[in-house]
Image (tube, rainbow, N blue to C red; front, top):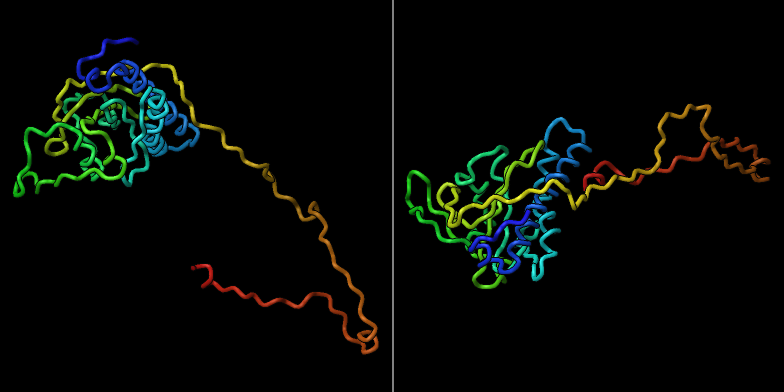
Amino acid sequence: MSMPSSLWTTDVFGEQAADTRCRVGQGLRNMQANAQAAQEQAGSRTTRVYGTSRYENQYERLQDELKQVPGARAVKPFGFSYELMLIGKGLIYPFRYSNTKSDVRSARIPSRSRLVRELFTFAPPPKHTQVPFDLDFGPAVPIAEPRGALATVPEGTQLVLVPFACNASELLEAYWGIAALGMNRQLEWATDPEPLHLPQEVTSYTLRPISIPGQVTAHTGFAEGLEPTLTLSSRTASDQALQVPVQTEAEPIEDQSSEDDATH
């Protein structure tokens, strides 16, 4: 679906704005498809598998799509397992804000982790800030200086949020825009959060069948097993002369391991 680019997207992404918009929506569709496939394959009664897969795919499937945009660059925050995509002046950060349809203007960032605080150094300043002795909201959270690859992004980079709503049954809606991080993790939108088109077609399906080597599917009876290999040796002439008793089993070898070894 072709939609005209808004002024802020053109300013941030330049001539790649329309392509970036389409690819973000496609990446979210692929995220949902892969997470649902993982849940189905697991056959679990809970949706934990979906949740874990969805979290991983929200970064990796978007990266699959956005790395095809000319000039795109992957940026890995310090101590973070995934990479974020930088296109033009826009650093794209996807997150789930709800598992049902709800007003995105009331969305909150899921956590105020060190990573989130580093990312929001590329966002507009909030209108209201907490004072150090605010009894209602607790002490002010210090600004976190960007580390790792975040410290290398060009001056003027802007954080572009991609909040989306989904659950194990359906991808419901998604938006993108620029916002400040206000009190209680509340977003203060500097742009109108624009709805993203979510296509039905899946273009990146990463779930692969697990190849399991052939296994024995039934217990083998004693009479059906392979005959053991016996090692026979004749007694020496001296043993026969001295009438040494026949030894039918090898002397046991002392085990040099102990239970303590297994704990190290």
